[in-house]
Length: 226
Image 1 (cartoon, one colour):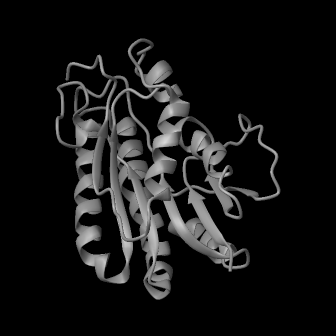
Image 2 (cartoon, rainbow, N blue to C red):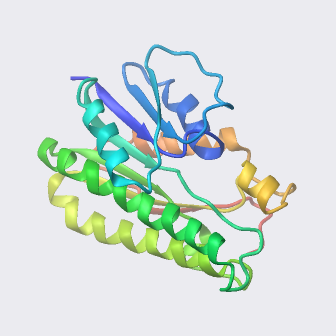
C-alpha cells in the first residue's frame, strides 16, 4: 500500500513548498489541501489537490476517507495557519476568531481524523507547524502566540500519548521564514529564512528512521536576536 503525505495549507507559503519537496520522495503520494490553489503550478501524477476548509471537520473527514483509496496516511504536515499584523489588542474579533479557528481548531480537526488510522497502522508522523511565539510571546502577537502555545502543548501531549503506537509527533517552531504571511501580512522582508531551505528541513525531519523522533525544534535565522 502506497504511503500518502497529507499537507494542509498547501495553497501558499510553507505548505506549498512542502508539496514540492515531498514530491521529490519516490513512490509517495502527496495529498494537498487548502482553499485557493490559483498559485499552484505543479504537475505530477503523484499529486492530488483538493479544496478543503480544515476548520470544518466534515470536510476533513471527506478528504481522509478519499485518501484511503490511494493508500494509507504516513505523514501529515499541519501547515495551515494565519496571523494578523495588528495582533496587539484583544478587541479585533474577526481576526481573533480566524486565528483561533484555523490555528487551533483546524490543526485539531486534522489530527482527530488521521490519528485512528495511524494507531491502527502502528506508524505515522505528525508535523505541526508552530512558531517561536509558542514559548516566547511578544506584545504584538497576543492571540497568535496563544494559538501557537496550544499547538506546542498539543504536540507534546500527543507525543506522549501515541509513542506506544510508533507515531512520531514533531513541533516545528520557525522564526521568520520568507512566506507571504511574513513578507506581506507582517511586512518583514529582510533577515528571513529561504523557504526552500526550510522545506528541506521539514523533509529531513520526515526522512529520519521511524524510531527517531525530532520532537521539538526551533529554526531561526543566524542573525535573529530574539
